[in-house]
Length: 424
Image 1 (tube, rainbow, N blue to C red):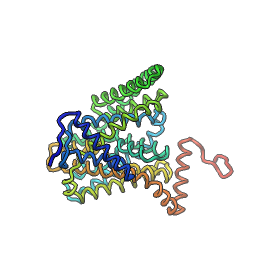
Image 2: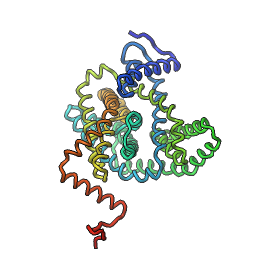
Image 3: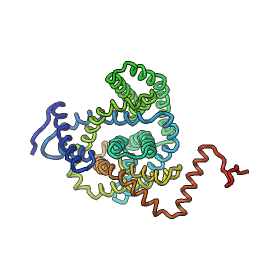
Image 4: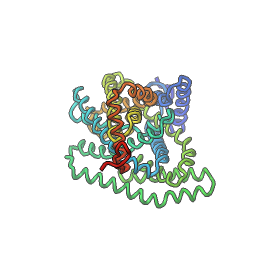
């Protein structure tokens, strides 16, 4: 029984914001993550639950603004010097984690009796974490700056890998042959686009932001920064890449002006509003009937995401020289999937009704892991402490020596003897 159906954008926003306000107040009262409130609100106002109904198309358009703003706010925290320092380690961790999850998801899909294409697509869906989900989770749960820095570095490198994965999936979905030459061209074009936009941005954006700041009008600084944010997102979209890439680059460039903290404070209330609409839009995609029909697959895939990402991210992080404590906390934080999983599922199932259930599974697994994300981040501290206490001493010593050895290599130091003199 339908009680209320919206007919225009104003009614959409009134319904979504009022229901979201109610569910988040209840979550706050029950001391539950606000993400849960937004997802429940989305189910309530979505087309799959009788009662009240908002137009999914209109809400989806507004929700993309939330993605852009949340990624822009992440970029404000990262200077290019930090990005350059993080790129080799975070990039390798992201690559190893993506390969491991694609293999694991493919194996699970084959065990469930799905076709080779559906199994491969499942692996790709499970491989990419969500930067937007992480940004929201880190607002609710504070973590060490090193863990936060590493996690965002990994997830942003994953977004770049996801862009290439989308290109690969589109080629394979249309029956095309994947060639190393074609993939190399895609990687080169992405690199050239990023370098060109970065070079132009470094010459213009910090200067413009500092000039606007001299007017001493916070409103003007906010509007100018958001203008740059949407302009870079538009350029990335026109070039065929993710709006998230452009938004993050805009945030980093604004941060290079030295006014990143000030702009972040101005942008935060706007991010909270549109970020809430984004998570409500995710909840609107959840179909309770499909949850019942595919409950076993959803449970298994959610468990695979959580266990697979904790293990793969933690091991890959230790491989590049991170401490056991930092590696484990990064692994727990990355145990979810996000927006790119929807896109990969949509591309892979387009024109293939038999495989369309994978899109519903991707949304459901993303919603479940997003809901669990704050709990996983909180659990990372006691888990890291427990493992630290129970890990055999020889393994702890080996890991410590390995981390110290990699640190010396990065600094270019020579190994020293016990007396402190360089080894001959």
